[in-house]
Image (cartoon, rainbow, N blue to C red; front, top):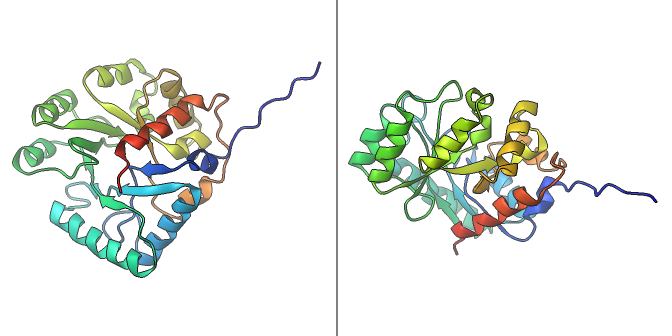
Length: 246
């Protein structure tokens, strides 16, 4: 008797039923994502071809690096949306932000409203070097302020790779997890891929995002996923329907 391995799907094909992307860097000239409107147009049209039907784009807010205010983001979002419409693109397109959790973040959300993905769901990130010393205090204060933290790309924080229980601790503290789709094709390296697999297998991933910045990210969607079982990833992708809008 012969047994044939089921072919692993291309990443782009997993989005074919309609997908709301909750993490991307499509607003031009505002962070390390799209530099020009032409870049924005390329990223948006490419992701549409993969099956993205609505976008919640999330430029960085990092004090001292990307000093984006809510007004800055709203203004560039309005400009970008108008330019997309002029180019015949009327896909639902909103803007939030990806906030760095550092020693200034608490003061920020205690003094002004954050730009959220939906309702009180806010996308947050950490430094790739280390977690903030007061991480759990920040998470607690954020929830006291009425927000639900969605931690961007937990699989990319290498300081947790050898201490998987820290992920469970973050979940217990109230963090939802958003996996970068490109982690499933090994774009960020083997260590990140293996951690992504462990998080998916453990049922710890809630949502996904493209985290699209540039053309190399778009090309990587043409890769096959490295997971033997794509069901947990597909489930997390389907969970993004929670954020869909028109």
